[in-house]
Amino acid sequence: MFLLALFVGGWRFGVFGLLGTVVATLTAYLLGVSWPDRVWPGLEGFCGTLIGVSLVLYLDVRWMTVALVIVGAIAGSVLTSALNVLLTPYRLPTLTAPFCVITSVMVIGGPSFHRIWAGHAGAAPPSATAPGTAMSWTYFWQGTFNGVGQVFFQNKWYVGVVFLAGLFVSGWMTGLVAFVSSLIGLLTGWALGAQAADLGAGLYGYNSTLTGLALFGTFIAVTPASAAYAVIGTVSAAGLTAAVGNLFEVVGGHTLTWPFVLVTWVFLVAVPMLNKIKRAG
Image (cartoon, rainbow, N blue to C red):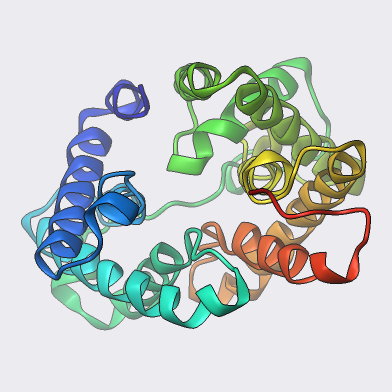
């Protein structure tokens, strides 16, 4: 259903996302990463998906983009293994960090290479052409669904609905947590006075969506205390979204899922000190 959602968003997202997935998964398999523990469950492919989708968004459909997705997915696979070695002793998952590193390196370095950057698509935020903080009902409801879709760089609300449906198929609680987390991210941005067009595009919801899913049921056991903990995490991710975006503004403002990665790592590291919060599993 996620793959279907990408194709609904546009054939280029489906094709390049699938290319990244296949290359990353095949790389891990050929290099001998554990099949039952890592490759089969898809843990070696999802960062490749994100690399493929992000690069075709930023660089557009070109043969150079195909080459960069292949190279990026291979590098992302190796980086995933490296981060697993470093983080496993601390019981920390790699999350989407490999994707963030590879894509950040490519889009920050891209302007130095004419064959990469000439004619690139770019990705200015909606507020660049529609500034203002006046919130509308359309921005509100579309932004909630877009907060789910923007996990894969999709800003069409109906694509977010397909992604959300896939999450509900995975489990009713998974879908509900994703929806509520996206809404919390949007409300946090609105309360702080973020640009309304960016809220409507889901730019303040997708990191919160991922953070909520990570901190409530995936890596943290489901309890009333962990629900409150996850809410704090989702709010933090929304706030950090603006901070990371502003920090990266000099290189294009590519926030990616850095806020999700950083917030989730911090909140997981803190767990041993928190008697009310327990790790899942």
